[in-house]
Amino acid sequence: MADKHQGGCLCGAVRYEITGGFGAFFLCHCKYCQKDTGSAHAANLFSTKATLSWIDGQDHIQSYTVPETRHQKAFCKTCGAAVPYTQMDGKLLVVPAGSLETAVSIRPNAHIMMGSKASWDHGLDEIDQLEGLPR
Image 1 (cartoon, rainbow, N blue to C red):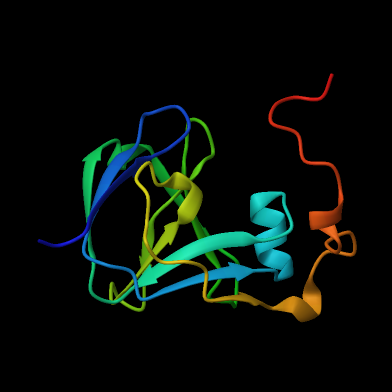
Image 2 (image 1 turned 180 degrees about the vertical axis):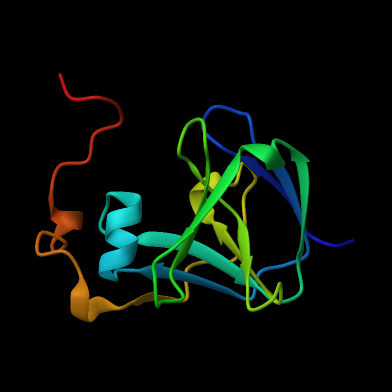
């Protein structure tokens, strides 16, 4: 039986299903990924074999590609949450890991683009870790 994964956006307008496995999982620290996530890195799964099926809300999806680059982001027009997209004429599926609602068995393969990582992105495992919000 093929791997199946479900996911969606923050507001629930966009829903999708992925059938098939992922070939790679990268944590990208490039400046574009920092800008479009508002964080230290993006966490994206990649597949050349899996298929994407939209369950709901495909008309809510907007896509943006940084001019003269391959950097792309697809997101819900209502809530702005990242959603999957394809590149290379549909041959490569890119899935934002945080948009998945099902567990994946693949662990990240690597941190990439470390040459442009955020200046504050070091020693993070040494700071306090809280189970909930700070008091």
